[in-house]
Length: 303
Length: 75
Image (cartoon, rainbow over all chains, first blue to last red; front, side, top):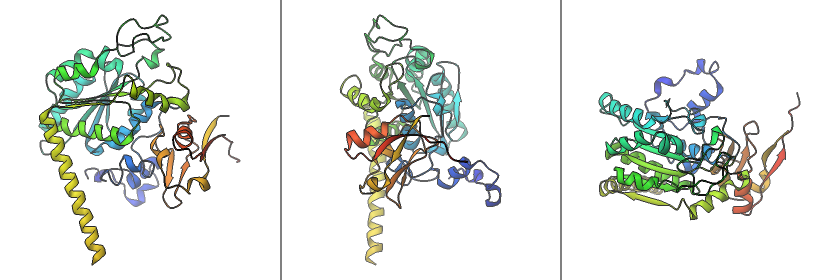
């Protein structure tokens, strides 16, 4: 664990904020996914803290899952841009960089290259999390160019299909015909084919998902990060509905996500042969390690 | 005054389940007590979205969580 230097001495603990001490004592740092991962979320102190996002927000939910699914939270840096998402992403005990609107992928390019030069012996993960406006509208050129250059980091688009915190303007990702506060006649153009663009631009691992199955979501996040370490750019297009602008009652947010899974956000996973090799290698090693652990436990019981 | 989620611990502990804790959009809010085998709500953090009620009642048909009016703590 690389966060040893942040562990306070017993005598100093009482002067520190309660949340900090809890994170040191019960947080996920230095633990494996089996001990503090998405399967036992709610049984350890999460890196994400209280945030000002709306009640019942699916984006907040996805961000929570994202932080729980990080394979290496102590060596991860997240980048974001204006939009709802950064309200929660910035409240986590993971470094967060906030740039000008739309330039998160340009910043991440520089950062991931710098990490590789500065820490050649370490694995540092860079992940950009931005909304549909930041990734596909205003940040479009920087997103596309980072993919075309083959930069090794993960891009996650939190697609709520609207400019949520500026009053409900249509975005490139809003579906055709969507009636919004500032698009009263309905959107006249098609939804942008984000995953197709990613494949064409050279992303080696692309997923489109509605986060209804927590294990599947966590698996995609983990795969995307691990592939980005070795092969090239990876992209996750995730549905995170805006229950305010699309007037979804909060108790039906999850039902809506399930409906979208059958509609615009059907699960799609694309990977190149190179990415598949990396995934099979890493997951194979993990399976072997698990089997060995189980075997060791059985032997202990017998003896 | 606002609504918060309340877990019926007696009902909840009869099931081997922690599904609702996996579907709360707030971090460190709907927690799971392994010793008592029940979920519990950190009432100061709950925003009252009732997503957990949907998961427990509609998806799993267990009905262990209900929405109640938050009460001011007595000084």
